[in-house]
Image 1 (cartoon, rainbow, N blue to C red):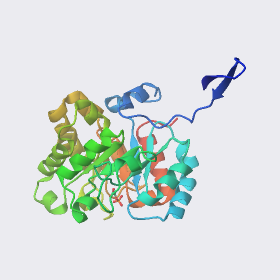
Image 2: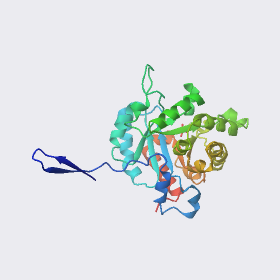
Image 3: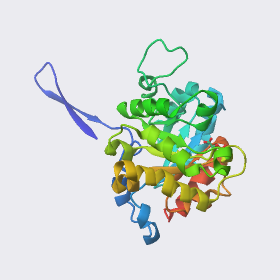
Image 4: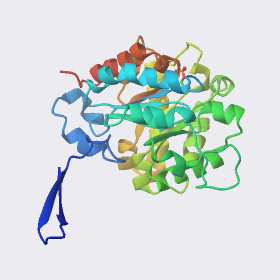
Length: 307
Ligand code: PGA
């Protein structure tokens, strides 16, 4: 609550009390602060106790404005009842202001699925960070569908990551090898190159505040997820290992890494019980309120966050 004094024409003061909005989701890099307030963490989770788990729903090109609002309204009460975990929904651009309004005062964050790196200009069809900022706290960047169908490269992803950070948006940067690369044994080098490309030129502090989603392309939308152990191994060596080589061990310990690709309520615990996996980027299953809520609830349980 804030107190404001206003001088009235008669020379006396009028005291105004302002009741603020409920606390917004954690700011960039504040995972540590939050973790210190989590006495419920068990000793088995000390290794990643600094990292607040984060589950994000990537709605892709699904849901009209009306459907988007109905979906978040259906999820809101159940999601808000689950503590200790960052929850994010990423609807299509047109739905963003409406979803943000429907979630006003909530701890559920809103993210965009892409953005351009310039503030404004003659770039027909693009959406800028300035336009997203009033409604979003996060932005997914470099999703494999954008790389595959819309010509995104490590260079354009890097420009977008820098622009997002400059505007205080938290980038959720997607990396991951395709089937041919996986079968050719190139996973490590492909993912390492994508991480290096996306994070080029960032400061250590900036790198520590981003979220990286490891999404093997062959697991996306196929119903064939990676195994928990397999995903953890790639995240440990190719994602966190690369961040450590670029920015040092302490940044690698702080950066949050999600797994993505055919995540469902039935397999989320397998991923979230891995030490290097801090969350999930969920596509198809984020479009059903009960599935997304179940994924968040089971994630909290797997990380030992439920009473
Ligand atoms: P999926 O998509 O969960 O439907 O496999 C994941 C993603 O593309 O982020």
